[in-house]
Image 1 (cartoon, protein in one colour):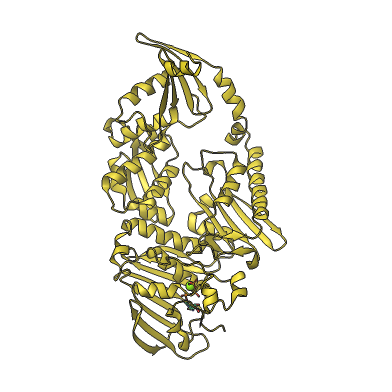
Image 2 (cartoon, rainbow, N blue to C red):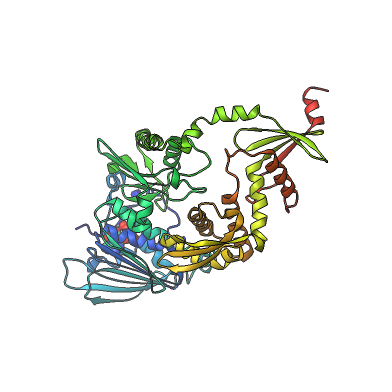
Length: 544
Ligand SMILES: Nc1ncnc2c1ncn2[C@@H]1O[C@H](COP(=O)(O)OP(=O)(O)OP(=O)(O)O)[C@@H](O)[C@H]1O
Ligand SMILES: [Mg+2]
């Protein structure tokens, strides 16, 4: 048994310090990490009012020895590391001795715990970090109950985003640890409603399908590589799981969820794509001395001792997966992408004329999204994808009712619990934008009607992206702002894809429609739509 001790100053100075409790989800994260470190087989999380009223985490782990319970709330008190050597090879999720101290400081906290080899346990109650009461109890494992989070730091409380954004962060946190620890059962209740109930399973594959559904998981390709003491397991979604915005891209290093842009980039490189985003889960395991988690105060970033080994392995695995699916599917889009340079060269020489009463103009396309239009007074470069987004954005925002089509068969979309919460609470906004959607229970929604312009698109992908937009949230949930953001996401899905050929009639119609919008110069995300270079300017290049 490792007893809790206060870390010596020399080590404290080396620990990356910073904000531990930023939002309710950070509390959930820290408590779950403690339960996992305590060897729990089962972890239950109860939330009330998006974590502000109550966060309770119950585990069946080894518990805290009676004599150590008070000490656990001191700053830099930990049983997980002792000296600098341990800091260089961290094998537990916790190591700073910061979490309980920081959480207790901004809440009213009760802990009920009993160490596995003792006959009685301890219940301790603190408010704002001050001890109020302590008494013996009999229990099993550890229960930590937090009430009135940020009651004494109103500013932090004010900075919380909308309730559904905070709820989504909580669900995502539980989901992440759920994925990394298939041998632990997890449950999550929010306002008495069961959001997750995930029994123990043996494999990562089974766990992914428990959380995201079998239909999604079956579309993932699995590859594992072991080299020396390194093991990487990659679950990579193929072309049909490509998304317009970053969907599920989860990276775990030694079972800790982390953010690492260089790993994400390595996978993108294997895809040869720059517009759509692959979905993947990657689990990297390596000796603790080869990775440093002491980089970011919330332990979200990692530093590898030999990053090139990791990147090479991941690149090879991803490339192998991408290539193998290209062989499997003859008409694969990726193959087309690989030959993209030759396609755009051909189209560059392809000049079209449009004749009508008022105007005559020529255009040709360059690259995969730009058309160059000739005018008597200069040339216009038009990003037709962005132009289309602007036009559709306004159509959706202004909900032209004659353009709503009823679906012959209502479309039931099964969502992951996090997306479900976000979408369910904003169904009224979807309805205002012409997407007739209702709650269908059990993490599903049903769609009965859609705006004409999106009736053929991947609706499930679009709904997931809307959830992502909602998760980013706004600090003052402003209805109009949210509505605009959702409309922009829908417009993005409805718009012409890059690589899609556009003919002269479409360009002409697009230009006319663009002129009628409130801002023909920008797409809904603020990117420029067109650029004009006057003949005078061009002449200047030649000193004329
Ligand atoms: N659920 C739990 N079960 C058993 N012991 C626990 C539990 N939660 C906390 N502890 C004990 O309390 C100590 C302090 O917890 P705390 O989370 O503050 O620090 P830590 O986990 O050591 O490091 P970090 O700040 O990085 O999380 C832990 O080292 C552990 O000994
Ligand atoms: Mg901890």
